[in-house]
Image (tube, rainbow, N blue to C red):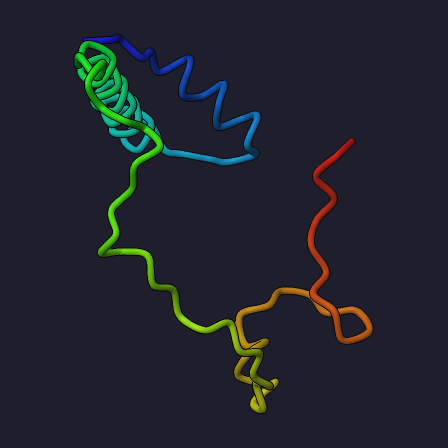
Length: 95
């Protein structure tokens, strides 16, 4: 199993501007380890006989992309922290 340190999780969290408690950090480190182990398992599979250009014919239907007007603007914006001129204002992320 790949080992993910608490320091690595804290570094990634800092880059993503996320804050975690020590308990959450430990949990996330274990989850990262499980994900990396899964990728290692996938890397070890022999896929030489698999045609990557072939796809499942059953799941090729998509819903129609029909634009709709959302009438209840108040409900739409109920969780927005800050609005400016009718647009959602988000914090600056690039310094």
